[in-house]
Image 1 (cartoon, one colour):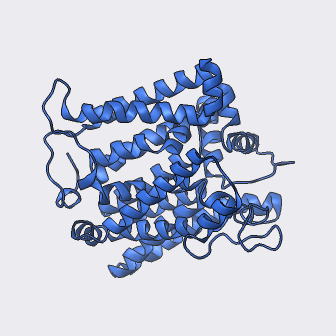
Image 2 (cartoon, one colour):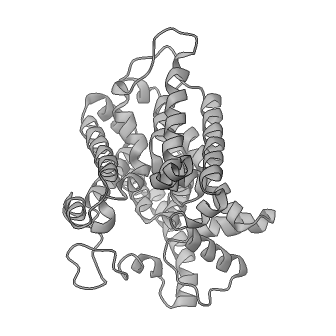
Image 3 (spheres, one colour):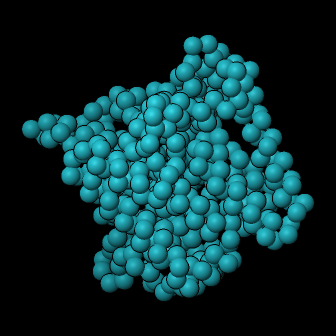
Length: 387
């Protein structure tokens, strides 16, 4: 059942919903199916090394583990490599295995926290519908850790623990920069609630984490904001850029539209992107309904975060990524989108041999995982293997 009564007040009480144990089992089974599919089609280790930014994360984690940054080109926020290096040192694990272990564990934790914060059905749709989320969870990527820390911050804040929440939100920001919206949302809420002492303490925690994060960058690279500047120091196709220094944000939808026109893509990619954009927009409209407004009044920090984050991803102005990576960029806000759309999401209430939740979860988890594997490997490679 849901943990917050307000989180379920505006929806019907369904006869059967996934339990926490069932969600745990389905995530583990999805991981197993993904890894088997990846191993058969491409080779799991090969896919891990070639997927996304994993090679760069491993190089950064190796540099942190040896505390030797000579020759390292820092490209990303380094919270994820720090976690990989710390866990690897603590348990004497190889870095490539630790990279996937951190992502997989954080993905599982994120799913369970979403179920606690919102609803088990929200957690199920969050866990199994986003192909980028499944790939990042089981191959490695920074988003699962950022989401787990951010959601844990809101979970802590709901229980009145503002300072641990600020700490978790600050750590999430070191993993993915847009999670700064979580820290801002907590700060704004503390000010609205006139909890000025807590606000100052939370601000101090955020500044302390920021200084600790920036010191190695300043000491070894001479730029405390190196990972911030890395987003604008290389040419990512920033709209309106006259050189390698593009701007990150512009008018809403400009980057999405300009990127679609400037960078042709297969119709399958376009369909995937625009279906997901439409889903986020539908969820945004649903947030104006009375049920979601009731939830927002009860948990303003979460609602503020969702609003800020949606505005950011819709205004992202690096045209090469704005549309093509939208599914990935939207991951942290998808629990809020699915919660706003919960009354319209399929939930099987018909009698049958399978319990009601499994009639939905079984095809949802299986199909989502298989599509994620095929997308990671490449559809052409899948057809080649089948032949």
